[in-house]
Length: 106
Image (cartoon, rainbow, N blue to C red; front, side, top):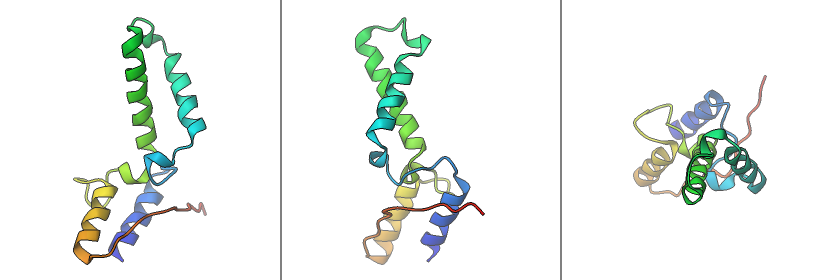
């Protein structure tokens, strides 16, 4: 019960969270972010082989910022939401998965 309440608070307090895990990000969104990052001026002076790695790192960071499981857990800031769920699984012995969430604005 505490975990579910904590996750609900996490979702309510994090308006930037759009999906559960980084792999849930749409391919269109990831591609659009890659194109936007490639157009940035600070990459023009970098060698071509390093440019792609820099862009991939930036895109990964953007995708992770919008994923629930990669957020710092609101109830214990020393761990991520993924780690909190893993600890709950270990303590109660039941598999727990967050498959989706909806946010309601009142």
